[in-house]
Image 1 (tube, rainbow, N blue to C red):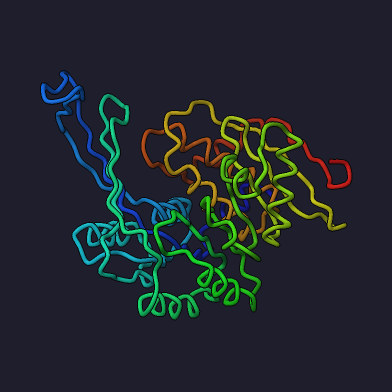
Image 2: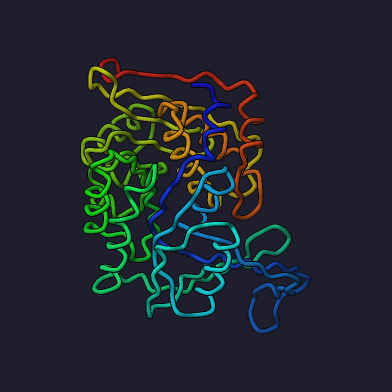
Length: 338
């Protein structure tokens, strides 16, 4: 299936994003002196902005690519929660699965001066979601999962994602074999059993598999170990400047590895790149692309957003333009030859 046909099909797809809802706050300023009170720069604030972060940034990526996004997670009964909800409504994101709780909305505040991050400070309550609020969320998911083409689990380790929630989502997805993709977090890998695909970076893959990744053989060993450990269909390990490596079972049930080289020309900011990868991959996969082609498309989307400062998104037009550039050759290895 051609890339253009896949991307044109994004607009028909409904993706449910489940995870930690985060408000990204950016404080922009300039530095011209050091504080007399401590050896730290004094930032003169010139602008402040709020953006969608965490699972809400994944939803933002879905919408930017032409898909239809629904969000499921928790916010606080505070101003940050109100701002986050308004931002999602403005983007056209369905917030029917957003549950209000008494804990504060997670906010990540970044101070930027002269295009460099000076400091970041977070406000959060990362305790595990339990009780009545979890029941409300699960009741929503039971109805919502079968109504969507794919589910993305966006785990930022802020309390929403738990083994019981993952088991419930897998159960709700089973009747229609709904594609479930997970952006994982270290320490939670044992949560993700029986999902369709996970997208760890090198550090996460190393810690999740319990294997040090130092070269191609150890990378392949770690990818296979994750597939076996989690009983998932595929693993996509993002490798920064070295691109991505996809692990999936072929027709003979052997694990095939496909190395996809990076297409990024410039890297200014990797903030949110993982969100872009998983959003694009889920849309491409549910639009008829093979996992290899979906990963290639996601790789191009990542190459676009890392060239921007701050949390950025790709568009179908950007993707089509990027995909017209010659792709470096892929390398594949089957489970027999690896």
